Length: 119
Image (cartoon, rainbow, N blue to C red; front, side, top):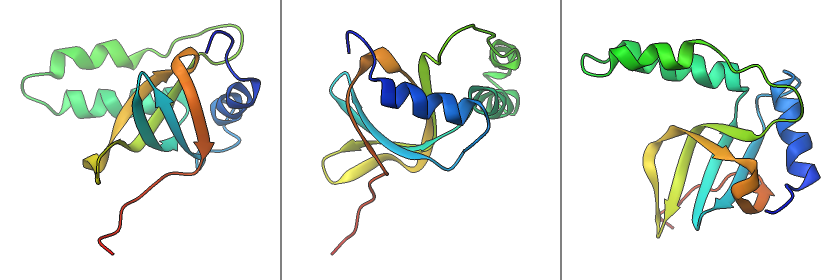
């Protein structure tokens, strides 16, 4: 989006302010469809740091996520947890992952997330 959609910026701002961490969203960014639940950036960073800390090979990278960014102005990114990239008839990864998406890269979006059924 040349100029990010004000609605999605407002949704991200509410999540960041702690008013909601249950907002499910599906976005199209760079041709990928990502579906999941939004988290405040600080919570997202903390979870990534915990996962990296517990990794024998990637523990050194956990410090990158320890310090939250302090920015003035509206949010610039969406922080997804329990999220999947939709590909064909599956969501990758099946259990959900952690994704950071620049709001300016979102070309389409809808409230809610998608799940699959074998029916």
